[in-house]
Length: 116
Image (cartoon, rainbow, N blue to C red):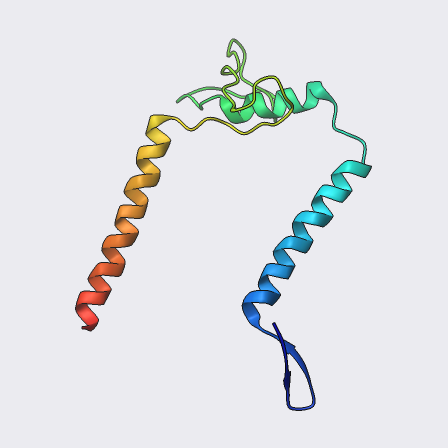
């Protein structure tokens, strides 16, 4: 929503923020469509590092590589036959997410009770 304020025009802050988000996504999509894709081997190495848990005491000989004798964790994504790398959350991740939001609710409820 655009409105006049004094001598100029202003955009209501929520609409301004929404336009920034939409513009950012659109520019990201357009740039990704017109640039050269990253090599599949490089992407697989990167995602393999992300999927593999760190073990206590492991020695990394070279940056951005798995330690000797460690295999990358299997690829568990929502669309396995595509290039989309949207991982399926584990029960541990979902329970941590839920507990975090319960704590946020408890903090908001506590502050509300304290103020009223």
